[in-house]
Image 1 (cartoon, rainbow, N blue to C red):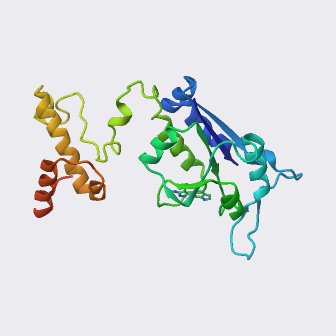
Image 2: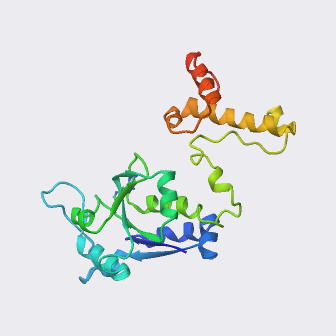
Image 3: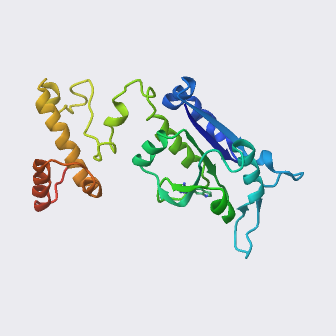
Length: 249
Ligand code: JF8
């Protein structure tokens, strides 16, 4: 069973996401265990202060090192028995590859900052790694931690109720997903591609692969460099490159 230990000033933010859907079911079925620990529990002063003004001045507040070290070491021991991952905009980009790697470990801890972030000594002497979920600004590490937890949990064997599911996704193939349709075959005059109704499985597979390639070419050409492509697929993409920009999505 995978162990995830989360350290935060806002433990309530984790309640509903850990209860619901695939993640909630994975926890309920014992595929992983998630502990949520309030850093404020380790603050020893009367008002349980966890932040302070930055040395050198400037705006905002910084999370003090003592309550963070104390809470992490109370739960994980000293040195910590699990890798401690700090969520920060300065971290290594979190990817599907990283999600797979974490899913295959015994467990890890996620440390969530708030305010202007954590005292640098936490990063230097407690965190084993820093991750970022993307190039936009959040108000704290909690939602980033939830993204990591969900991306990892759904990869655990038995988490999807569909054993092929996770490996088949967009970003597992390295390409974007093909378009999906369900009934009815006509909705407000909008039809469904004929190939999906034809029952021709070879044509269907070819259509989906080409749709994945075309979408990736148009929307995320950066992904094509890493994707595994046949010689025929490479020629198809070379032809698209030499053509006028398509008007389609
Ligand atoms: C934060 C603490 C983040 N991709 C990301 N954007 N913003 C954050 C983040 C993480 C922690 C703190 N502000 C204060 C922002 C990540 N990971």
